Length: 111
Length: 114
Image 1 (cartoon, rainbow over the protein chains, first blue to last red):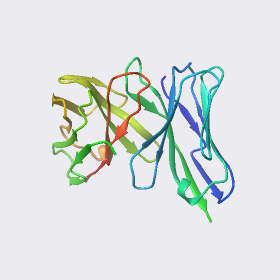
Image 2 (image 1 turned 90 degrees about the horizontal axis):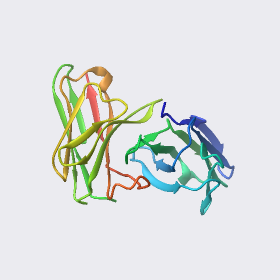
Image 3 (image 1 turned 90 degrees about the vertical axis):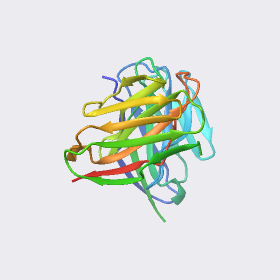
Image 4 (image 1 turned 30 degrees about the vertical axis):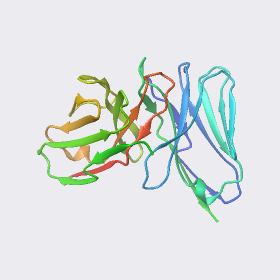
């Protein structure tokens, strides 16, 4: 099916530790997007990856798109309490503009 | 934040009653989407619209209908609400229709069906 598998479902870290979430697809993706949802909030776009092997950085966040364009990862270096939330990856729905999301990874950070 | 307003923000209703949720946007974006969010399931696409009166089904469309009579409004209707439809409903929009385009989400509607 079109589902993207996201692991882990939950992750708890101590502040300052690193964190990684993975998104895997059984089929080749044209692109993948990442969103962050703070507790009680709505999803907010973080980034889009399009090219095979692409790596993009946003401050402490590093996003990668696999060479085969079937998997992606989000890595946070030295987590902070502001990183708390649920991170979703999303792939295109059929040929349209909608996104199909993974189940998300919920990150909690203790100081 | 994008100009997206969802109403109501919270609703409690009884099983078997009809419910309509509204999404209103001021961005003049062509594409609009309804998602539901449930613990353990993430965000699931219910229906989407690619223009006035043009809609299509998503992943979990059973029990839901939608209508879009104006660019700015996208309505989600539960004809006969069931307890399994208790969820947080998010509306989202996108502009030009490019497959790489990001989505902007509204603040959500918490619906409880008792």
